[in-house]
Length: 502
Ligand SMILES: Cc1cc2nc3c(=O)[nH]c(=O)nc-3n(C[C@H](O)[C@H](O)[C@H](O)COP(=O)(O)OP(=O)(O)OC[C@H]3O[C@@H](n4cnc5c(N)ncnc54)[C@H](O)[C@@H]3O)c2cc1C
Ligand code: FES
Image (cartoon, rainbow, N blue to C red; front, top):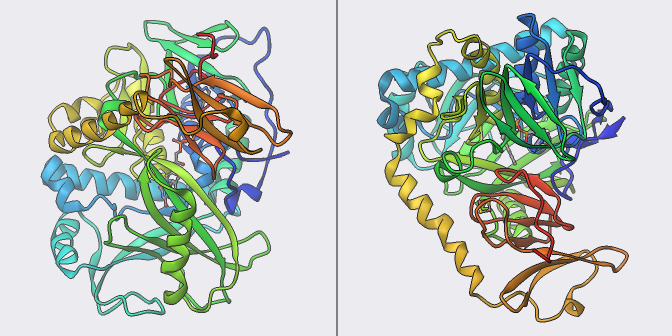
C-alpha cells in the first residue's frame, strides 16, 4: 500500500487514503487492444468501460494510481458548470449548452450507479449547490441554466453562516471522497481483466492503424487504439496547449464543529471565485474545504494564495478550528470552457481527454461514456461538443488573450536570474542562475546537495520558475511541471528538464 501523491509536496485531505500498489510492466507482456495512459479518474473510468466491451486494456501510469490531480481535487460533482451557461450558450448554442449539462448529469448518475454496484464506501451523496454574489450575474445565469435543463431557482440566501444575499440553488448535484472511489474502480477494473501498470513512463505515441507507444528506457508497445488520459495530455504538442491555459488552484481544510454548515456545494461569483463544501476526515470529523485563489501557473505566490483563503474564510465561518490540510493543484482551462474528449486530429486511433476546466471528475467520467463508441468507430451524440475540432471556431477572443498571456513568460530568457550563485540557495529551495547564455534550474535538497538542470522547458522552451510550496519547477507557458531534480510531473511535456550540458 502507498499514499497517493506524485505531483507536489502539499498533501490533500484525500491523500491519506491507502492506495494499493500495482505492478510495473513485465518484460514480456502482450500488446493490448487499447492502451490507456494515466491512472486517474479519467483513465480508470475509460479502462473499465472498455473492458466491459470485452477489450484487452492496459493502463500505464508513470506514478502510483491516482497520484495526479484526482488526489488534489475538492470533489464537487457538478452539472451546474462554473463556466456559466450563458457563456456556453454563446459558444455552443442552446443545444450545446443542453448537452454540456446533460452529459455532466449523466456522469454524476454513472458515479452514483457505480457506487451502488460496487458498494463503494466513499461518502457519495446528492446535495444541492448554491451560487451567490453578483445578483446581476445570477440573473443572467438563471434563464440560461434553466434552458440547459438544470433544476434551478432563486432562494433568499445560501444556508451559510454569513449573509450571502440571494443565491441560485441547483438541485441534484453530489459530493464524494474521490480517492476511495478511484481505488475501488481500479480494483474492479483489474477484476474485469484490465492490466494496471504503475511506474511506467510514456514518452511518446505515434498514431496509425496500429499505434506505437514509446516508453522511457526505449521499449515500445503497440495497440489498436491509445487513450491519452494524462490530465494535461502528452500527445498534442501544439493544438491543445495553445487552446488551454494552465492554472493553479488552492484549498484549505479546516476542522469544523459537527453539523454547523449544511452539506452542499457553494460557489461565489468573485474573480477568482471561492468554492466551499463540507467533507469528513478519516475519523469522520467534519471538515470545511475552502478553495480558490487561482492564478496562472508560475505567476503567483502559493503562501499568499493560502493566506488569502484563510483570511476570506475566518470571518465568514467563525466556528472553524485549526487548519488540518492545505494543498494546491493544476487545472486546465480551455479557451471556450469545455473539456476536449475525442479523437486527436492528425493521429489515427489516438484519443484524448483533457481540459478539465475545474470539472475534471465529471469530464473524466464523461470520457468513459463517450470514448468507447468513438474507439469502436460509432457515432455518439456528444462527439461534436467535446471534439477538439470545435475550438477552431469557438472562443477565439479568449484564445488570443491566452496566447498573449502565455507568451509573456518567454521574456524570462533575457531577465535576470533569481540568484547569482548556488551558494545563495537554502536546503529545500530552488532558484535559477545564469551561466553565460544558459539559465540553470538549481535545487538544493534537504541534505545540502545541489541538483542542476537546464531551466528550458522541453515542451516549447519556456523558462521554468520555482514553486517553493510544492518544491517543483513550473513552466508558466503551458503548465508543464518538474520535481526539484527536473523529473517531469505534469504535461504537456513528457520529458524531464534537459541536462545542463545540452
Ligand atoms: C484544487 C482543485 C480542485 C478541483 N476541484 C474539482 C471539483 O470540485 N470537481 C471536479 O470535477 N474537478 C475538480 N478539479 C479537477 C479534477 O480534480 C481533475 O481535473 C481530475 O481529477 C483529472 O483527472 P484525470 O484522470 O484526467 O487526471 P489525473 O488525476 O491528473 O491523472 C493523470 C495521470 O496520468 C499520469 N501521467 C502523466 N503523464 C504521464 C506519462 N508521461 N506517462 C504515464 N503516465 C502519465 C499521472 O501520473 C496521473 O496519475 C479540481 C482540481 C484541483 C487541482
Ligand atoms: S509547457 Fe509549453 S513551453 Fe513549457
